[in-house]
Amino acid sequence: MCGIFGYVGSPGASNTILTGLKRLEYRGYDSWGIAVKHNGSIDMTKQVGAIGDIDLSNKLNRACIGIGHTRWATHGGTTVNNAHPHIATDGSFVLAQNGIVENYQHLKAEFEKKGYSFVSETDTEVIVRLIEDTLKTTRDLTTAVREAFLTLTGRNTIIVLSADSDRIIAVRNGSPLVVGIGDDEFFFSSDTLSFADKTSSAVLLENHEMVKFDNGKLTFVNVMTGKAFDPQIQTLDHTTTTIDKEGYDHYMLKEIVEQRDTIREAVQYDESEFAPLVNAIHNAKSVYTVGAGTAGFAAGQIAYFLRTVASVNAVELKSYETLGFENHFAKGDVLIAVSQSGETADTIEAVEKAKSKGVAIASIVNMMGSSLIRLSDHAFLTRSGPEICVASTKAYTAQLSWGLVLAFASAGKFKDGVSVINRVSKQISGYFTDELFSRIKGIASGICSNEHFFVLGKGQHYYTALEGALKIKEITYKHVEGFAAGELKHGVIALIEKGTPVFVIVGDDEHRADMYTVAAEVKSRGAYVIGVADRTSTLFDDMIPSFPGGIADPAVKIIGFQLLSYFLGVALGNNVDKPRNLAKSVTVK
Ligand code: F6R
Image (tube, rainbow, N blue to C red; front, side, top):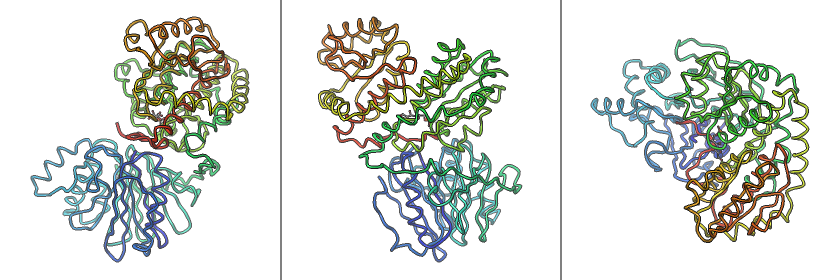
């Protein structure tokens, strides 16, 4: 979702900002823009689509300061006019925003009455007019930005570049904002990854904090009180900041293969590090897990692990459907939030609601320093490294592996949990063979002209079915539904016709016989049955072969779906790393 990148330092700011924006590309965007200040005026470039190999060095090579933005459309279509930054009527400043101004309609109507005109359909331009209007009385850009910011409702993070002096002002509420501190240069960004190749020192701003670069120096201010404060400078861990396809055609395939290591990395904790959370779980009346999308399915699977391995009565909540539970949240409960980015607005909102009721917050997150980590009483990192492909793969299995070890630790068997993961990790390493890839490629080419697919799973593989279906949907744009196998006879079976591909997940578990029955039922109605299984069966027309992962099987069987999605997406000519309409970091509701 939208990304902000500002820079002040040496000449060549435009290209530095473009590089920063490219490192934010993984968040997903549909248009972009940069604005640099040079000789007392602002020069802007905005475009629809990907940044590509554009080089602005000839045009703007002398500018030392500027801001940029990648936009994922919310208010107003994907047009150059709607792309950020947006400029003040008198050209005195430009602004870019991440978030949604929830009171923008009211503010827009007010400003239209006052005679202001709008050139875009965005909510962002309302902030620009608000600052302009406030400037009439305050006469100072920093004061006007602060006052305007306090008028906005919703989660908004903004960055402003002044035309008349070397000044950048950025304020955070909701969407992330970090400041990279280099030698005589500063970076203002949505994440630390975007400048990780330049500096390892950063300040991670909290909500309602403002940073200003003016007169060669940085100042940090709490926007609510107006008081300046000394920021805490953090040192980033550079081992997790490489962004490179490393010889693979796509990040998606690279990240799928990386799972041979990442599921093990996610559980590199001592038992003592789990102990406070395990203790809170044992003392809790209710334990909830929460997430959205793929992370939501991981949350469901973690609740399943806690119930089945540790007899903890854990309940899965969807981040965006917690309203009915709010009255039940109580002091002493535990809520485990699952997120790759740690910035998903729905998940953060659910966490904030629970936290306000005294619920202890635990989280399993991939991005260091993210909002969710900072909201947590028990924060854990998946340590999967950057997940650049918009569709989540290695983060999902890392979340599962961490959740499984948490469940074992809650059952007093921490070491057994770690051994299960170490064993499966070794088996996954041997799983990625050319033979497997050709087999799955073959299945993909056989079914890529079909439009409807179904995925059926039961017990430990209920969430595998849901996540497997989501992965295929995201990368192929086909209609794919994942169902609990038990639902089949209650309605879904009406959709099966001759040739419909149906994936039947058969694990090495107590549901094997039921899953064979399901395969027979869809097959007798003409379905093309593809087993996702460890053993062949005459019921299968084709099969994605796997190996028995035991209790960790959900982290194993999903890999077949990830690979199938990848090869289907490639066969269809889709942009597998950046599927249409999707954003990596969903920072708006
Ligand atoms: C799908 C996918 C999304 C995310 C969801 C939550 O492949 O990546 O469904 O899982 O948007 O994002 P995070 O994990 O960052 O909270």
